[in-house]
Length: 110
Image 1 (cartoon, rainbow, N blue to C red):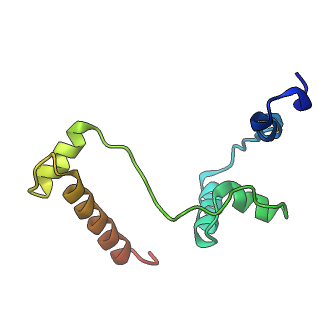
Image 2 (image 1 turned 45 degrees about the vertical axis):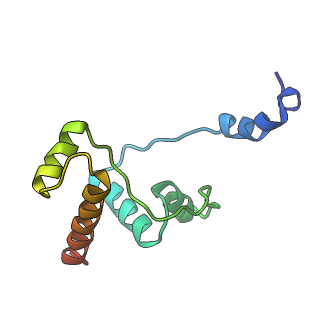
């Protein structure tokens, strides 16, 4: 099926599907340097590489957030750590947020 025969909503995706992903086996120090530069420049590592290569960034600006996944066990562990009920995930999340802010402030420029 050619691109012009694809449904309109899929046509933009066709170019993405045709893109080629390159992976590089670089020393950890080199990878970390790229990641650190990306963070300092507010870019993804991919966009930092594109910047180094004088290519246009592909990512659209994203809201600054960080995420990770927790199991039910880990939520229970955090509830106990913060002396909160395990079903009060809003309060647990607020305490985790403060813990992360405290961590960042204490490790700034380290």
